Image (cartoon, rainbow, N blue to C red; front, side, top):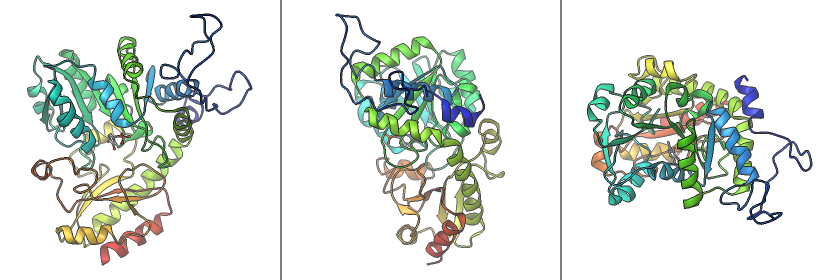
Length: 380
Ligand SMILES: *Cc1c(COP(=O)(O)O)cnc(C)c1O
C-alpha cells in the first residue's frame, strides 16, 4: 500500500456491531463475559480496548512494523522500554536528548542501578567504542531536539546486532511519514504521539512499534502491568490525526524549507540548525534515511545575547510561545528555559545548546504570514 492510502486506512475496519466507518470511542472499563473465562477477546480495559487496538494496528502499519503499543504519554512509552532492563545494565545514548528523556534517565532510573553513558551519536566510531558487555540498549533520537543532529540508524543497528544490544529510536521529530527506523534495523521505534501523530495540540500520548513477537510480549506485559495506557477518547484523536499525517507533513516540509532559507539569509540571524541544508554535517545520512526534512529547526541570533533572544521570543504574533511541537500551528520556544530546563546548564552549553538558542516548530499556515511574523520579530 502506498503511504497516503496507508495513513488513511491503517487500522480502520468498519465497526462490527454497526458498520460505523470511524472507530467508536469505546468508553468502558470492563466487558461482560458469557461465562468465567469466556469472552470476546476483551476482559478489562487496562489490558484491551477496541479503540486502542485500532490505533495500535495503525501505528504498526505506518511504521512498517508488526506490532504497535500505545501509552499515556511519550515518556510513559520511554519508561516502558527502560523497564526491560535490570540493575547493572547500561544504556548508551546521545548527549543531545529531549529534556524529559534525560530527566527520566538521570533522576528516576539511575537510582534503580541502570547506568547511562552519553556519547556523540553522530560519531559511529565513538558509539562502537562505548559499547561494553553491560550495554543492553542504545537509545537515540534522530534528528535530535533541538540541535537537529543526525544518527546513522543503519550503522548503529549493525554494530548493535553483533553484540545483541537493542536499539530504540525516538522518531518523534521525523514522524513515520519522513523516516521508518525499523526499515534500517532498529528493534523499537518510539513516538511522542502528542506531536506530529496527533498533530493538533490536543492530546498527550506515546507509542512503541516493533517487529519481534517476543519483544512485543515483554512490552505488552509492561504496558498492562504498569498501566500507563491512554484513554479511548485520546486514542480516537490520534487515530484521526494519523489520517492527515501525510498532507500535514508535506506542508510542514515545504514551509520548513522556506523558513530555514529565510533565516539563513537574514542579517540578524547567526547559525541555523535544520537537517535539509546540504552543507550541514548530517546531511548525507539524513538524505539516506529520511524522505524529507520537516518543519523543526533552531537558530541563534547574530547578537548572541539572551536579552535579544527573549525579545524575539516575545515579539512573534503568529508563532505562539509554547513548549511542544508538531501541531498545525507554528510555535516558538526557548529550549534553555523551557523544554530543556531540566538539563544542567554546563551540560547544555557543552553540547552546543546555548542560552540564546531559539527553536521553531513551523506549522502549516500560509508561508507569507510566517515569514512576515519572523521578519518583524527579528527586526526589532
Ligand atoms: C515531547 C517529546 C517526548 C516526550 O513525549 P510526551 O508525549 O511529552 O511525554 C519525547 N521525545 C521527544 C523528541 C519529544 O519531542
